[in-house]
Image (cartoon, rainbow, N blue to C red; front, side, top):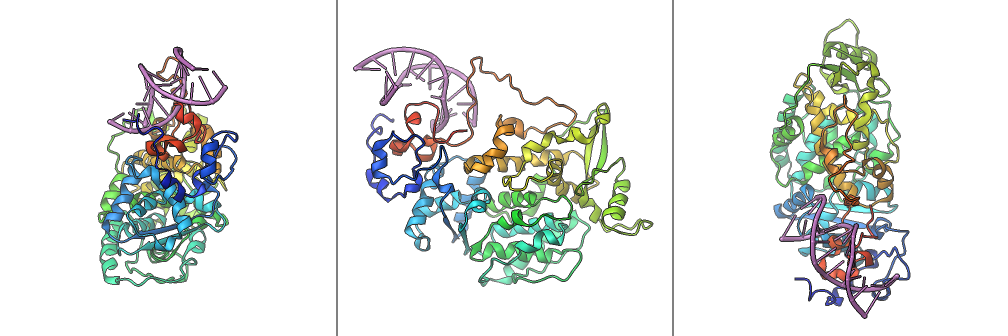
Length: 489
DNA sequence: AATGCCGGGCG
DNA sequence: CGCCCGGCATT
C-alpha cells in the first residue's frame, strides 16, 4: 500500500508549489527538499502560511461548493483537507483571480472561516476575497441568525465592522433573500420578544439610534459576505472594547462559522435546534439551584429569580424605569441562568470560571474578562428563551467549542496556541463535556495508557497535511514515524 | 481505516 | 546516529 509510494513521488507537483508549504524546523536536515522547495525559514514549527500575506478567494458558484464547506466544518476527514493547506499557497502564487478549477474547492475548505479569524487577524495586508455567486446560500441564513444573536449588542460594538469593507455591493435578487430572510426572521422572532426588521437591506445603511435592529445587523453581515472584500470580522477584535454587555462577538462568529458551513441550511430552526436544545438531557441535582446571573460586563449580580434579574438589568443597566415592570424582553439577553450547587454556593461565583479556558476565543488580542466569556456564549441562546429549561445553554457551547477547537488546530497560529495550548491542551473530549460548575474535577489526567504515552496532538501532522504521496515533504520525524516536529502541539 | 508515534531494530 | 518499521493507542 505504501511500499511503492515511498520515494516515488511526483516531483513535478512539487515544482508548482510555493515555498510556503515548506517550513523547516530543523535546518541542516532535509537538504533534499530544500533544494527544490523554496524554504521559508520560520521559527520552529510555524507553518509558513500563517506569516505570509495570503490572498484567499472564496468563490462559490453553485450549491455544490457550499456543500464542500460543510464537510469541512464537521470533521477534518476527507482527502480534501490535506492538500488544502498547500493549495492556498498555490493560489497565492498563481494569482487568485483565475482559480476556478475544481481544486479550488480545496481552498474553499481551507480558507473556511474557521481558519480566518486567527490568520486574517495577524496578517497585515492579508486579504480575503469572498465572492459568493450563489445567491442566498449558507452565509445569509447564518447571518440572519447572527443578527438574531447580536441584535442586542450595543451599537458601538458592531458599527465599526459594518460595511466599511464593502467596496462594491454585488447585485442580487432581493426577492430571493427576502423570502429566506423573512422565514428565518420569523423563526427568530419567536425566540425573542424584540423587534425585528425583515427588510433585507444590502446597502450599507447608517442607523439612527437606539435599539439596534436586525436590519442593521443584516445589512452588515450580509454585505460583508457578499461583497468582495471579506474582512471576516477581524474588526470585531479590534473594535475598541465596549461599554456593552458581555455579548462577545465570538458567539456570533462561531455561529456564523457553523451555519455558514451548512450548505443549504434553509432551515434556521435546525440551527436553533442545535443551539437551544440539548439532546442529552441534563439531570439536575437536588442540591442545584437555578440562579440568574447578570452578564453585563463587570456586573456579577446573581439573583434567584428571573424577574429579579430582569429588573436589575432593566434598571441598572438599561436605565429603564425602575417602577415599571414593563419589559421589552431585552433584559433577557443580559442574563443567563446558572445552576448553582447550593453546597458550594458560598464559594461564590468564582466556581463558574472553570468553563472559561475552554471558551477562550481565538484572538487573544484582548482577552475578555474570563468570567464573562463563557457566559456570553450562553447568553444568546439562553436569553432567547429565558424561560426555557436552564442548562441548555451549558451544553450548547459544546458545539461552539467544537468549532473553536477545530480552528485551533487548523491554524497553527502562534497566538492561538499561546492562549489555548496551555490550559486546553488536554483531550478535546473533556472540552466537549459540559463542565459542571459544582465540580472542580475534570482532567482525567489518569488516562488509560499505562505507559506515559504522549497524548496525541490535535494538530494535523505532516502525514495528514501532505499525504502519503508527498511523503518527502514530511518532516523527518514524521517520516520516521516519530513525533512530528513540524506541527507540534 | 487512518493517524500518530513509541519502542526497537539495523547498518 | 540516521533510518525504518511493527504495533498499538487514538481518532
